[in-house]
Length: 271
Ligand SMILES: [Fe+2]
Image (cartoon, rainbow, N blue to C red; front, side):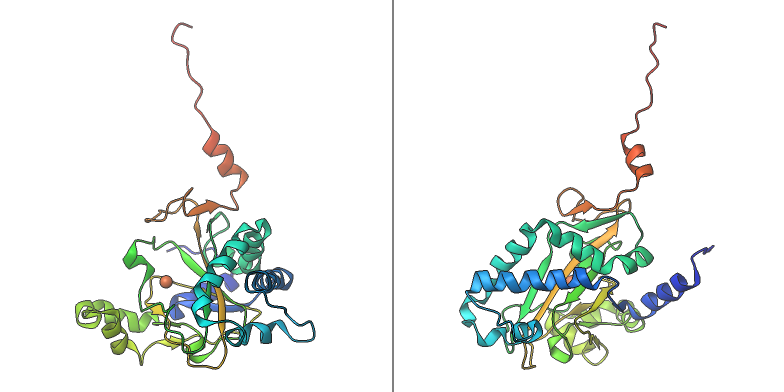
């Protein structure tokens, strides 16, 4: 296959293929800080909390579970998600935080998920778990990638895991043996092979959602805050999540815009 990509693109592409994900320092710290500031102010509003200015935002988020009642967690989560998605700038800043790598891995004419998801995992909470899955098994297009942004440092069970491509190949060959009757059974068989993602605030994770991934109960002492959002090339095939409903174009190029509007002139039969 011909490949005219530049050498840095070739290297990143090779890494992505080999590991199934990439972690990189954001190229736009101001945008990333905007996202975190918005989350902090949304928490203050929805949970009636005050972020003390002498304390770091990292600490405020990490110790969130100490400040709220457990049974209110989902309610708070929904309200915060609504607030961030109402903010017109939020999506744009999200994209800018990851833009450089998206252009290399996916393309520069992109569709972005219309709503950004927020995950809050307080220590020992089992109400918001994501059992092992591949997004494609539930109807997503294999042309999508997930951009996962942590708002605090994530490690061990406070993070997420992914099954590396070389391990997935073995699973794929013998799928029914691995998948068993439940995701719990599936996870128990791949548990030792998965890669736990260690990622800090300031970094962005982009991963191949075709590979099995998920999380477990957070057994660390801090709350995990992370966001996720899907991106794909505008003109690549869509799965269950359609353009105009779930996805919207965010970087349509002028040539494509003109092409989409183009109408062949009609020849009048009388003349
Ligand atoms: Fe997923």
